[in-house]
Structure formats: C-alpha cells, structure tokens
Image: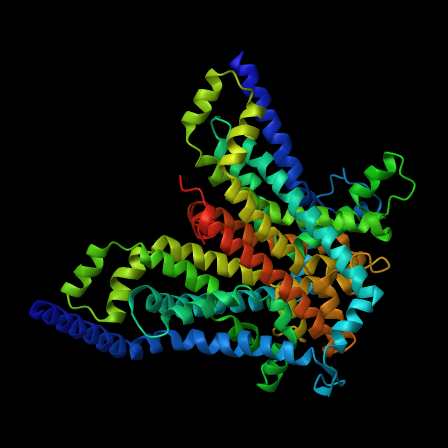
Length: 271
Length: 310
C-alpha cells in the first residue's frame, strides 16, 4: 500500500519537475537539432549533434561575451566583498559619531530603484570617459547597502568572548577583521559572493545602455545582439547560445545551493 | 549630599571618557566607511537628487536641464494616455506576477517537503529556474511561443485556437510575460518558502494527524498561517521586482503589441534613451521610486515586528 502511495508521489514530483524545467529541457534538445528540422516542426528528429555549439563558438563572439561577463561580475564581486566587509565592520564593531544616521542613509539606498538613477549615472559615466569600458560596468556597483547590512548582521553574531579574545591578543582592527571576523562569517561571505556574482552575471539594463562594442558587451546583452542579427532564424544556434549562457549559473547554483538554503532566508526574512 | 556629588562626578568623568573614545574612533570608522560612502554618494545619492531636479525641467536633446517647468512634467505624464496605460498595465502585471509566483511557490514547497527518500533531488530541480538569467530565459520563452516553431503555439493550435500567436494579441502578450516572469522568479521564491516550511515545528502536524486533518487542511490551516511573515516578505519582494522588470519586455515583446506590455521601467528606458525626453523620463522615474520606496518601507516596518522566530 505505502509502495503504491509513494510511487504515485514520485510520479507527481517527477511530472512537476519536468514541467517546470521544460523550457530548459526543450532548449537543450533544440540546441542539438539542425535548424532545418526545427523549422519544419520535426522535434522528434534523431539528427542530434553538437554542430550548433561548434557554429556558435566559431561564428559568433559568444566566447568574448562570456569573458566580458566573467571579468565584470568577478570584479564587482571582489569589490563588494572588500568594500562591504569594511563598512560592515565599522557598523558592527566601532562606536562613532552619527553612526545611526549613517546606517540609516545606507538602508535608504535600498529603497531607491537603480532604474530611476540610470540617466544621471549614464551622464556621470560618460563624463568620466567610462562608457563601453570595464570601469563603467563595474565601479558603480562596488558596494551595496544590502551587502553591508547582511554582513553586519553576520558580524554581530560573533560571540562576545571571541571579540574579547581578539582584544586580549592585542589584534589591530584589520587583523581582527581578517583573522577572526572573516573566518567566523565564512559561509555568509560565500553566500554573499555567489549571490553578487549571479546578480551581476545576469545584469541587463545597465550594460545595454553603456556598452557598444563586442570588446566589453556582456553575454546577456550579447544574446540580444545575436538574436537580432541575421542569425535570428537560426533557432538551433540561438538555443545553443542560450544554453551556453545558462550553464555557468546553473552550475554555480548547484554548488552554492546548500549555502543559499541556509543563509538567504536568514538574510531575507530577518532583514 | 557628599555622596551624590561624588556619584555625579564619576558619572561625568565616565561620560567624558566615552566621548573621548567615540571621538578617537571617528577616524578609523571614517576610513572603513569611506570607500562605500564614496560609491554610494556618486552613484546613488547624487543621481537620485539629479533625477528629482531633472523632473522639474524640460530637457534638451543632450539631456541638459533647459527650462524650468515646475510640476509640468508630472502634470503632463498623468494626462498622457500612454503613461496611464503603461501604469495600469504595470499594476495588472505586478499583481498577477506576485500572486501566481507565491501560490506556485507554496505548492512546490509543499510537494518538496513530503517525507520521501531522495526528496532533495526534487528540491534541487524545483530551485533550478533560479539559475537562469532573464535574458537567456526570455529567449527560451520566445522560442516556446514563436508562431512558426514554438511548441506552445503548436499546442494552442492543436487545442483549436484560431489565433495561436499569443505575442500579437495584447492579452496574450501579457499572459506570456507574466508566465515567463513567474517562471524566472519561482526558484528563489521556492527556496525561501522551503526553509519556511521546514521551520514549522513537526509536533503541530502530529497533533493534526491525530485529529484526522487531511494534508490539504494541514497546509492551509497550519503551514500557511505559520509562515505568513515569509509570505508577506516574498509578496513585497516580488512586487518590487515586478515594478523593475525590464529584460523580458525588451527581448520578448518590445513593449507591444500596441503598448500592451510597455510597463513602467521599459517606458522610462524608451523615453530616456530612444526619445531623449530626459525630463519626462525623470518624472516617471520618480513615480517608480515612490512606489518602490513605499513597498520597501512597508516591508521593513512590518517584518521588523511580525517575523515569526521558530
């Protein structure tokens, strides 16, 4: 009896999972088919091959776009890790004048949508000569109130005994930060780094308006570029490029899932 | 009397000592905060002030404030049928998107908390859409609903729909955008709800089992009320995300057909970077800011008090 019941439960779960992932599974399948079979609606074709991928790598700048995205998201992640950690340390461990007001000012930025700031930011970046450049793609995002807030919460959870121990050892501020606070908050820092990398790997609007050349265009905007060029009707290859773009983030998610499960909720609901 | 004086003296002394340490700490605190403050000032506070400023001006083709018009831009956008249509469409989209995402997320979380071996495999699968970028996901959905090669279009035709090309129909395009957006947001919503589901003490279900409650009743009468703070948190997060939604529009519908999916963030982008009406776009940006600031404030205010600590 329980066998049958469990069996039907597994069936239900499998059906839901396949339905949910169907757009991705279909994309993977289509990326293996020749475009002429797709155009003819022959989805059950057995002519599968990696030709579309080969074609995408050889005839489109997809690799260049991936490198651009990797550099951009990587630099932003490093920048945010350093700057947010420093600011979070100050808010968690130092008493200073106007601390409350400054912390409030940080929190207020979370209420202000970036979409409402793009015109002046575009003009600023243009004035600095940072258009179509890694500087313009990354420097505006080198800190985030969300990150400062999340890491401050993590630092506040460090036991008072450990802080006292640091003082007893006579550690300076940076030594304490590096030798005690950072290792203690390791899993939160990893979650934050994964989250930041994913967010900026996926970023769309800002690079759309600030990049004009293949030398800096990240892969998300590159997809639009590839899709709107004459390759548009070449569905097999378009699907291959979409899958190439998906793979790194899917892999990152699989690796980071245990961190996400543990920490996103803590940072989210209690934030 | 003497003692009082003595106590006062000590209090003043320790107070001035504290003031001294605080003063002493201002400098290191400044160095720790300075890099972040610099970035936020330059790329968040300054542009926000400039957007407010620009919204009071008619701007020239280079985007420089040319003529002070006071609230003129605001009056004209709220009389502009296109902006009102955009706002109404955005509201319909946001509510549908947030509601469907949460209901679907709850169903998935319920399924993924069944006591079965290898259930974590399904948890990973359900969270899978979280790894898809808006751009790549948009292309997958565009392919699904493409009139000539899309499987969803074939299916609709097979079910007898005469006009199976949803993307040329205003309602159809709205449906596709909502579905695609829900799909993209579902992985994150599911993960958050999953841990909320897991935080409900199992004793509650044991008692309900004894009382003979059905699984359905247990979910509705125990789980949902217990996780209501998380539901509320997610609802606000999805509303904020919904108002900012951009990539799906840019890639799937381009705001069409007939501006049916020309939602707020996309309209701002078009007015600013296609038509170079920076004044109008700034006023529209402020409307967006007010909506999002309000939603965020409600979230802070509410979650601070009502979070259920397991």
